[in-house]
Amino acid sequence: MTDEPDTHLQTLWRQQPTEVKAMSAAEIHTLANRFQSKIQRRNLREYALAAACAVFFGFVMLQNPDPWIRAACLLIIAGLAVYALILHRRGRADRESLPGVGEDCRRFHIDALTRQRALIGSVWLWGIAPVLPGLALFMGRRLVLAPAKALPLMLAADAGAVLLIVFMVLLNLRAARQLQK
Image 1 (cartoon, helix red, strand yellow):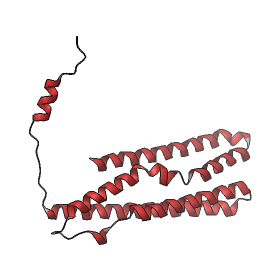
Image 2: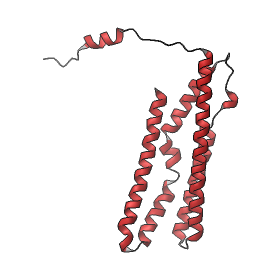
Image 3: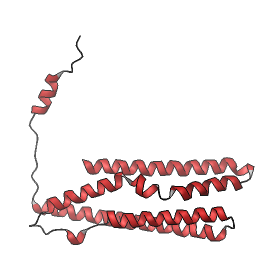
Image 4: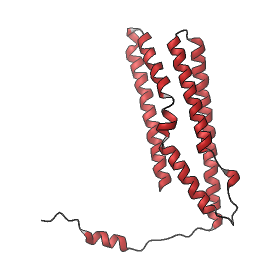
């Protein structure tokens, strides 16, 4: 037997006719406008979530006398600020630059899709990483200060937080793949 793949099926597959649906400039303009609206809504949601987390950790920082917990909360708030700033700079909606229907909407839309795909595909680097030092310090210090009875519950909560972070990264990677399509 040979180890060569069956090239006959590959050739047939490649030679089959493909359907090409031509889109009008108005359709592309509508898609681009809808995508920019989606980006704007996503960013507002992310800013609100980052602000809510910052308020929560600010409250914890002010209420907790432990200097390590306070430092961890401050690091988390700084990481959230970095996250929001990068999202604003690299991921903002660009509706003002959206060309008119007669102009080159196609290039604008492709550029926007590419920019957003790159952004959300690397969210673990710019969105999660800035918060991780503070979060690790916060979780570690809570474990040190926790009474022995509460340790299993604390570990479960920390594991849940880690799983949530992994889930968020996976969702963003899936969204980046969707944008690639």
